Length: 210
Image (tube, rainbow, N blue to C red; front, side, top):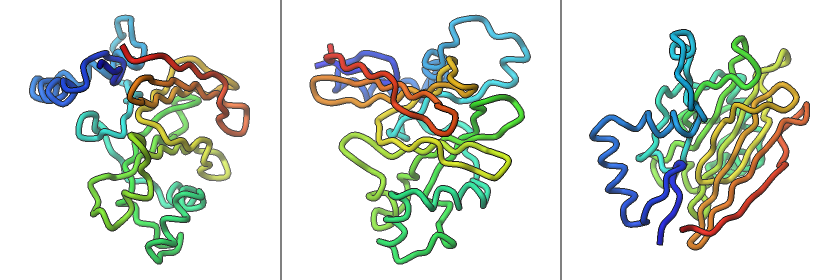
């Protein structure tokens, strides 16, 4: 059986071996270059301003390249999300004490160069008894997208998925987002578009694994 991982098709048993070779040869960046749709030569300015656009719940294979600490306002917005709130309750914590160590964050520019938004993933390296089980599903993990607004950070998308890509196409000023889930016999790609307030599912396609 073959599956698609980060835009690449390969046998299931080869995934770990393949990823190990990539890490050893320092070619992981090439995967994300392909995922982001960067099929043209970059200008010096584009290269200088490049940012990670491909993410996976398998963080040992595809780690966040430039992890950042979430600002307190962003953490507060994240703490209001249902799944995070439930995890806080399970750990007998309040939103005021939401551990930033539960998450990995990567800076992204959804609308333009002057706003700092974040793609957020669960930190799966934390102890099992902490947050990790709260944010894991069947071959999926929870992702959050936080957008910076004049009123503070706003949660505009949360989704359980295997991998997530920030696309070049736009809807209502913000970049579209594609989530991919992988099952035994098939994989599903879902495109989310911004409706002016938050991201909503607009297109979904399921195909058999080759």
